[in-house]
Length: 602
Image (tube, rainbow, N blue to C red; front, side, top):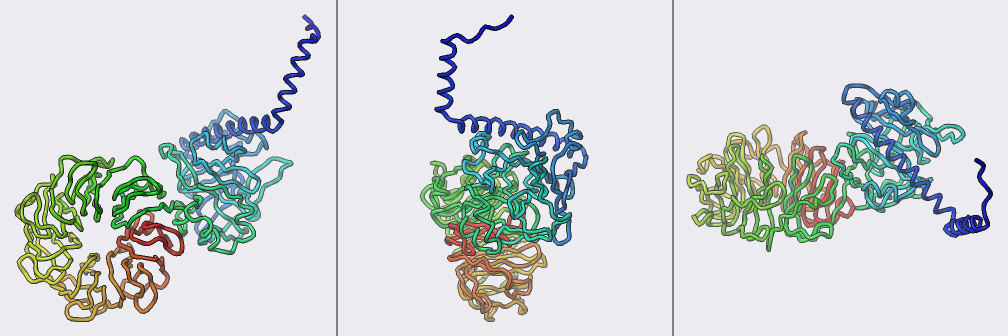
């Protein structure tokens, strides 16, 4: 049947609708269509991600089409190209796998070992990105496109100096393929720029969710137009670091295995009071303790947990009341021991020592009840807990400055070294003997000046280095030698200023001698045997080193290492990636704002 022509009334309605649409504007409709296309992109690359993961897990090699190779120091690191038609067929993907606007295939990067990958789509609207639960401020490229990346943290997407992904694929007539060489041999610098045989490159943000419980990787904090920000000043290494500070975007190199300053990717969270201890959990999260009350502007009293990217773990809030946490120890079951000068935890009375469940709630079964400060806690191989400090009673029984607890928190009545003054540090040897340092002059029934070694029953053994000043740090080497740090100026009757190494029998190692002009509070041994020291010094071996330095295995200064903290460092730790974590009273590391806690990598 033939439809009749519009009536006058129908024409008036149509004209009115057209007028309304015109008043809203073409831009609104265009924006709507952009969001529709973005929804298509997000759906496609998430579906492709799942298909790729299944095939890779089954052992299939899915090398990018049109791939170029990225190397570092001659080693293959990744292949980057596009996820083209042959790969779409291999993963049995039912859609076309192309961008709905420019008909290009999605940029695809695969690690050299074939295990890790990333896919990237460029979105047109920020709102599309926000709709999938990402950070609310994003990074753009110089065409106003917003990278949406899924896949593994261990790999990323490289861009050239025109802010185009290297070997980005696009169908004619766009012609934006940017490859200029088959191999990019890259050198990563501190400014996030990658110099290369194929031109200047840099790595795009690595803000991914796949296989990480839909948690945002959390490094993208501000919108940057790369063309304005990077291009034009690619050789000024400090510019991005000074301008970005805690708003650093996260790049490929954060988890790539390249040599790179990952502190540029780590969220520099502000802490309003000193940090006295830093411990790294097996999952990469970081526990910090001190006398602070806010972390990143959020209330956290004396203890907090940070995610592996440096952001606050909002699920953990132990709420230690009224005084400092000075030491944290993590048990093998994931429970957390804390010591200090506090008297309440989570609103419940706990005097100077407590145990937390892994979620930060109080373990109500554990209550040793110590009458004064606990400076250090160490866990023995069988689960017993050795504590040292300024206390004189534990659980109502006399214990002078050192005690041992059973795993349930009750006092070990068979252990009583009876120190006549403070104990600041405890270290347990592999044979079960216990090294202790502090201000004491007698312990375990023997005269021992500031440093001693105890047998497993609490008596002092023959180890007697004889320090003339306080010992704050003790470090065991694999060869049995012991490095000591503190405020002393002589060891065993010989001049040693704040740092010394003694042999396993307690005699001075005369080959190790470097002068340090003020106190050492913390020592950390690297896997290569080098020694990181922290304190409030400014000169090490005649060279300026502010609060942090590294020594070679023979005790000489490692001149290549200089984090340059602007105030005291109380604790140094090293995470599984080799990054150095510092806690103290400083507000900057290496000229970058880091308030009382910071990550540094070479």
